[in-house]
Amino acid sequence: MPSDSPANNSLHALAHSLNRIVSEGRNPDTLDIDTLSTTDILSRINAEDAKVASAVATQIAQIAKVVDAAAHSIQQGGRLIYVGAGTSGRLGILDAVECRPTFSVPDDVVVGIIAGGESAIQHAVEGAEDNVDAGQRDLAQIALTRADTVVGISASGRTPYVSGALAYAQSVGCVTGAIACSPDAAIFEKADITICPVVGPEALTGSTRMKSGTAQKMVLNMISTTTMITLGKTYENLMVDVNASNEKLKARALRIVMQATDCDEDTAQQALLACDNKAKVAILMVLTGMSASEAHSQLQDTNGFLRKAVLSSKQAAKQGE
Image (tube, rainbow, N blue to C red; front, side):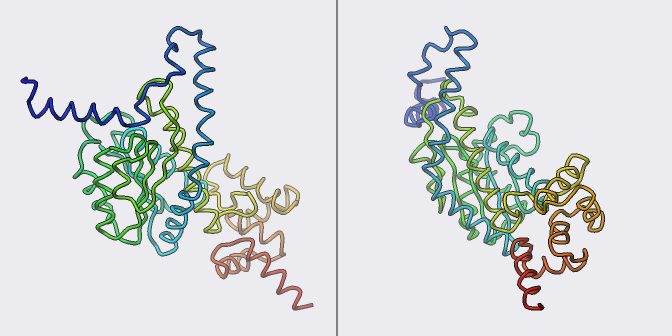
C-alpha cells in the first residue's frame, strides 16, 4: 500500500491525535514495571489508583449538573441513558442494570447502550466504536425523546460512536453529558455538560480500563446513586426501595426495616409480610402504626419520599392530640 494512500494518511492522523490524549501517554513512574517483582508491580498499580478519587473530586460541580438533569428527566417520564464503546460501554451497562435491584426502578429508566450491541458486552466487536452513524441509529431504536438525558462515556474522548450518539441526542433536544479523562475531548463538542477527571497516563500505556475505567465507574456510581437519592429512593442512608427479589435481598430488606426503626426481627418480618416485602412501606408502618394500605397511600401523597411521609404522619398526630 503506498505510503500516501488514504488508509495510511488516516492511520497517521489517528496516531498523531493519540499523542495529544493524556490517557494515551507514557507514565514515567512505571517505565520499569516489567522488571519488578509481583508485589512491587501491584504496589505501583495501587499507587496509580490512589490518584483517581482526587481527580474525580475536582468534577463534583459538573457531576451535580448531570444528576439534576437526570432527576428532572426521570420525574418527567424520561430516562437516563449511558452510551459508550468497549470498557466505557460496559461500565455504563453495569451501572444501569444495578438500578432496578437497588432502587426498584424499571429497567427502562436507566439504560446502558454499547457500540456493537449485546455481543460487545462479552466480546470485542471490531470497528464498532468507529461507526458514527451507529450511535445515532442505536438511540433512534430506543425511541429517544427530548425528555431523556444522554451521557456519553469515552476514556480518550475521541470515540466516533459516542460523538455520533451525542450529536443525535442534541438534535432531538436532550440534555447531553460527556465523561472523558482527557481535556479537549472530541465528545465534549456535543455535550451540554462535561466531566473530565484527569487521572494521567496509565500504568500500562493506553490501557484505559485501569485508572480511567475506575474514574468512570466512580462518576457513574455518583450519578445514579445521587439521582436516586434526590428522587426519594433512600431514607437516611438506607436503600429502602430495594427490590427484595431473592433470599439475600429479602434478608437485606429485613435488616433495613430493623435499622430504620430499631424494631426487633419479628416486628420487621410481620410488617414486611403485610406489604409484600416493600421495605419503605414496612418502615412507615412500624414508625407510625399505619396499616399497609394506609402507609402505601401516605407514600403516594409524598411522591415516595419516606422522610416526608414520616414527618407528615407525626405532624398529623400532633394536630389530632
